[in-house]
Length: 416
Image 1 (cartoon, one colour):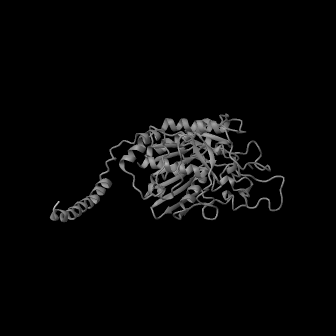
Image 2: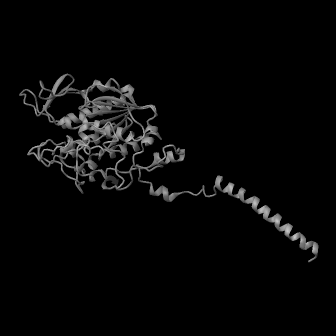
Image 3: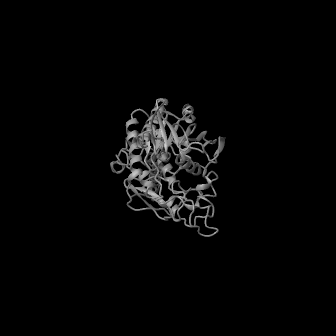
């Protein structure tokens, strides 16, 4: 090799290195923005999600889902979230009795001195899917410029108050309307997203009179809805309906202006008809009214109590500290839920309707009620022979928060 050729070799090598280095950024650019793996079908992921309705998502509510993922959610077969178990959750609730200012006094178990805290550390784990942790920002995004109304008895109110506490972790609700005490008729606004949340006390859903000092029984007109919420239907976008326990009280029933019968009545000229069929007709009348208005409806099923046959003022009523294992629905709880599921099935073709089936999961939580801690420091003066207990409503925070975790997933599917 001549001297000139030897001198040219380093120059040629430098040129080759320069060319290679120049092509590396171009190759990386094409790899990132024209991914050659994007055409591979992720069949394994599709198969694993084939039975999931409660689908997980990024914790960042700002992340936009693509149209492809929207279609995937719509096509997913429903996961039966009603079948599962309560499992330990060391993370605990998103709020507490001090951070949420809208908790009804009787459900603020921790502040009222309940000594155990284990009831706060359980989460519902369905057999076939996972329920994501409640995402307050996501909920507000889904309901932006919308009005969500809870209609029913104190269980509807219990679920509403849970939702307000969950949302207050990111945005404080402004109380913009109130009528009466005990959160019976109230309305809140979340200005950041122009979201309105309201509650309408209507323990029968249909028109009626509640028993009072001068009336020892309820009066129900089962063929027309309660005007206190019926006249406001056009204001709502989504309605959550929850009733049941008030139908167990003595009552006289009317249909088309005439007496239909009564339940636990002492009047000799009134036929005993029980309350199951009346409960069914009240649900049916309500769903038909909402269907005619074109509103979205979520029907929350019957919430069991845990007095377990004991008097409401007996010492030790609902004093459990852990969930039940393997307890099945029976009796009243089973019958009330069955009626609601049947009416949901019949009405689903006429209205945008979902059933929030909480009965089976809730019957497993005898530990989630206020019990004697419906009042503050119930044992400060010793242990009495008799003491009032609330074995119906749920502590806040408590199991009722799970209802709203499921509800947000229903709303997410509707908004896709």
